[in-house]
Length: 370
Image (tube, rainbow, N blue to C red; front, side, top):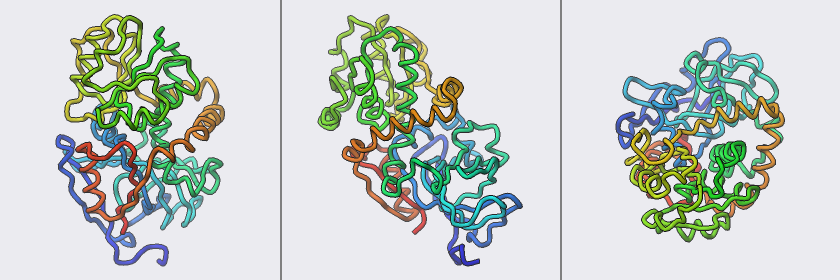
């Protein structure tokens, strides 16, 4: 079986659902010893990005059932990541060894998938535990037939594309709702990759003032992007003009910031949107006693589904592709990616990310495979 590296055991990282700092390394069978049923494939997870977005997946693991995609034993979960995998064994007649797919993977060396709806563009993983989960996360795109694929942009796509997809659909959601009557958008955790993608699109396409909230150490980075009309530190958010309606799009989720912002704007807060949890240890999701509108969690697949119906799947992809093409050039100048391999190395970087010790200009391209 020459397509499988003989003698190498599979590995994965699992985390405690109730203690995200508790991360353990799992060792499994050698790839050549993994039994595949008819219709299944074995993929080697070549590389993936690790960003604050993955911390948000873990934080919302129960609420949004992100833990359901790659289940572990009771109390544990596998954090989903976006990356590339190569088919090294196949028991499916329409999926060939050597094909490379972009998609949703666990932090592991390998993944067994059960392809369905296979065509030249890719497949849907129809594994039983994934069938009732959100479909967009079950799709795997064949790089050989993907018109947007560029080998030299794999790093940028892994680090930025999943986040930019959220930025794209957030920009569309607020435009679709006429910004709820507001003329100013406040972006919480403005240095986050989702935040800067949203700010880029707002600055480029919309007639709204864009205000970024960030920590003192990230002010210079946010201002250098040229996408924010104003950058304000968290401790100074009360200096933002509260005489006119604003909308708040929060990538950070900090409970204290959320309460202070709601109190400051009160009835002039037209909409409060919860997107991410970069400030995961003090996350304010679920607060019900705040002035102004109740914070609303944002579930991107709902708006994607709406737009797929409005524009058709091809129309949606065309619009997303055009937005990405306009963004990827500047983004590659803003974010510098570092590559690293090895199970222990990846676990250490995950913990570093969890503790907020990664600057906003840093991206990580990782692999558990040595």
